[in-house]
Image (tube, rainbow, N blue to C red):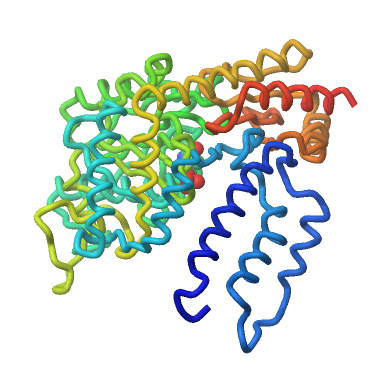
Length: 457
Ligand SMILES: *Cc1c(COP(=O)(O)O)cnc(C)c1O
């Protein structure tokens, strides 16, 4: 296809195949079967000289690719913390894909910049963050943590009279880094990339649920970066962010402290009255990282970095080039590491526009209720739940480590649903994460029955 001939048919065919794929997930296994994996070998062809017709490329992708996907777009995938994509966001993604916008600048995409502006306001509002909080539309919570910590590094050193972006870290005043024992690997990544050092951190012990114990918090002195967590990947538990902030910021040393919250999925609790109590006081922090591709249910890749004083984020991530015109409005590239990138704010806007406040709250509450149902059903069947189910995460043990691992393998083999294993405070566990709009109560019952059946074998 060298020109417009066939373009309409091709795009319609893609949309039809996408819809067929999603419909098929209702009856399909949650993971590829052996044949589908075997068929991936068919992609092993040499690069041809002449190329292949576009319709054939798409057909090949669908024929060999679709069956070999993990069905996390469906309702019975409970591995890691992976949401699905609301149909409106998949549809917006198709349209925005055709737009092919470079979302870096106002001038390269007025519509992307506008929708990010709108989404920024809605997000800060629905998550009850301080007025004026700035948002960067990044690829995920790992990147959001990185950007937030870059803003923290900038702000903490600027207060010491040191411009880290200009001078680098050589000779800079040291920053003390305090994390909870249960901190996420992505914080480690950010600390290592930023030259703050992943091994020179002070680790605060956590309780049985994975929450830091405020009484164990060290006295702080000098520039200090504190990384808290809202939504532990295993238990869903929240650090007492408000309490820690009150304590640190109340001290004379307060202005030398930056509190960051890794809230990859927990931040959404603030958009739901039933869950809000878990995330109280979180607005007292300085920065927050969250994912949109997890619980907001938009397509990959999509994360959000929030910084109370957006100027700190901009100072950490901006650069200078004569050809980069500065509009009077917010320039998106100044709040993300990338210059050119896709217009991921489009789907964030679409999800919120579609759901509204009530739809958002209902989606989060429903997943949490479904998580409690899993826990209740498994407990009734005689299995041990290892942590309180406060949010959307469930940890279950089927006995000794080998038995638990064996049951997980059987559940994965069975294919009704997909779950993976983890370690929790020295115990081997199966982790169930309910994070998808697509999960129905029927999906939960079906999956629960499969889990219990596999555990009995
Ligand atoms: C998922 C997660 C991350 C990393 O997010 P990505 O989107 O995978 O980069 C960071 N922190 C927590 C608590 C998470 O659950």
